[in-house]
Length: 209
Image (cartoon, rainbow, N blue to C red; front, side):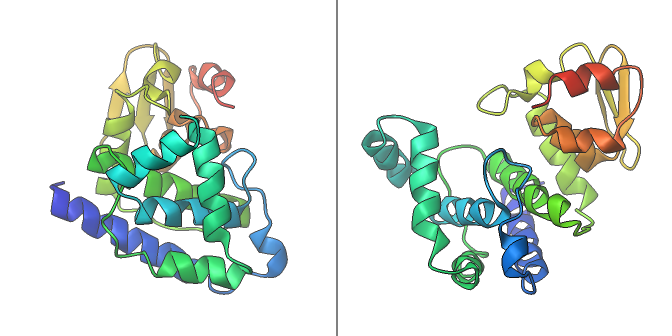
């Protein structure tokens, strides 16, 4: 996918997520997400902060956070939550068509959009059909990356095979299942393992948080 297509997909997936969250109850907004320590509302606030950010802003925020990525993200989440869940969603909705982003390749922001959407949807049992081409592009990006996510190390010595897409990677014991579940496991989310099987599944599960 070319840059324009990637951003078009990001915008579409953000819109879809915003639509899915329109009718959440107060209790649902506090549901723990797949992203450790964050509620689904906090993940959405993080996605808003990312959609607003530019490279210069990123470096300034890192500087003022003592070069701690976790401190920076915590500040950004607090800033974007708003007073109510409705305001959190409104802030996100206002940014769905934004193409601003921190430093990094476009595929990383496609991955952030898809994975964080699942961080929210899966605990809420909201089903969504992600475009296969997007999921494959994200898997191809993560398979060779250890920066922040650590996917390359996590899947080392294993063969990952998608059952719903023409995608496989690696050498070693196989782990098979839906492409998005493989992506979740690649990014360390143990929830993805529920859909995966094969002789390498136990090893991959042990490497997920």
